[in-house]
Length: 105
Image (cartoon, rainbow, N blue to C red; front, side, top):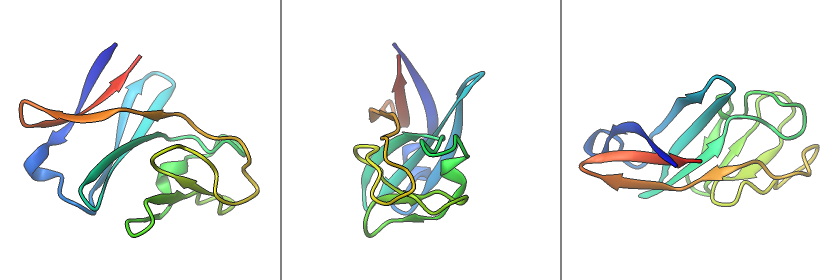
């Protein structure tokens, strides 16, 4: 497992989000939703579109795909609306040594 640096914790307040590159074919959206950190794969399960380029809602902790409007729960990756019906991958996020980090396998 590897931990990827996202941002200094003090520079990533509630309401922040950032897209990180985790590999040649993997990007991950990282969100600070009201003080809780989430990381979700940047790939809509409906058509493989760039999920994290869509709007996100801090009040409900969900991201909405910009292509067809499917909403996904940031905590579980579960789709909350059609046309998507398959979940997307989520990743553990933690703060260590003053940095927000995402753990990827």
